[in-house]
Length: 396
Image 1 (cartoon, one colour):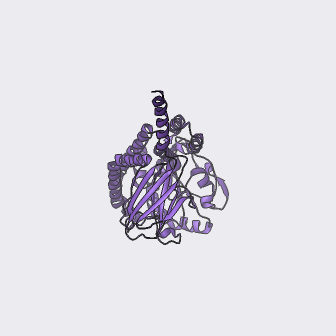
Image 2 (image 1 turned 135 degrees about the horizontal axis):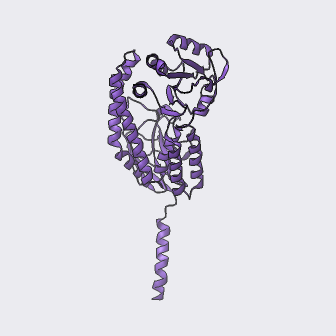
């Protein structure tokens, strides 16, 4: 009897050791003619690629293995050329963890590394990762919302945006659609926030929280950012480096949070003089900071609309400060004259290495930030009919 008592705990310990997954084992099955193609497993965020493991496809199969410290977003890359040419690569991002994972797809329909509008793609079927299952759940829960957003946005492009590029402004129709888009964007943010609160300890939840802080626009207040940081701190205590990284992002994001005061930077005026942005921000007026460049086609395409709204609202207290990312002053000055931009014009000749990028995190143009009468960030991404809608409410 005593022997049985001693054996049972030993067997339980042995079973526990056998069940523990020490690393990941990723088994792939690829349909179509993929024989001999190289497969890479890489960090989804690092560039140049940080490779965890690699192999080649044989008889439609491949096997990758290794170990990661914690679940995270990775990408499986199939190099069709065999020469490391990114233009010919296929790539699928998914959540990897230390488990047995299967990956199934067809070589003719897997997504490309660079988006290709001509290619009919189908995401691979990935099973065995709880974090990936959770991410798929998030996508499915928001599928109807995303589809509605795409439908309304495409309608907006047709009804308002494309005609506006030709100087035809269907303002009221555009405003109606822009208001629908704004409501859907708010609904998407609410859904994202709710998912984070429901799954705060998951890697998916952590990544979704980071998304609120990493883009050009921080559509949260400083108080909301603190609330999000507190949620991460409470649920990620076992990973102090993750908590520290999130708090660093949170502090940086506060500078661009809704309600935060605009930050002063040094720019160049039309005379080539170094000036402060603050010298051109009048108090008591709504001011739009509009970031653009002479070499940017979409920027030039939106200027007719800016002329239109400036003419309509300048006498009511609305101001525009355009900030160009042009390294050549002659190109900038020529574009300002050609486009008849009659409002304040400034330039950051250092382009994406200057204070505009470093301070305002502007990584692409055109983009706009609307300041309130006290110089605080009031609205972001103020373009097209979205700007019309806000101005119509501010100046009825």
